Length: 69
Image (cartoon, rainbow, N blue to C red):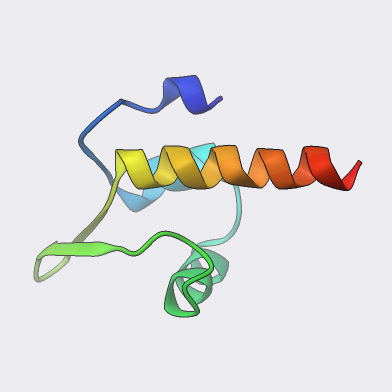
């Protein structure tokens, strides 16, 4: 699934949640506690995440799950 993520660029919240399916509120809480990648505010109502950060995060979560097995 991480291969569906562009190598560079930005992802909006709906795109992030397609890749890492949790609720919006859970995602925002994870960002606030620095469990999830840091958001970037590019406008008054526009927040994005770096595609590279999301890719690394998802790959890291996958490794942690593999290690737990």
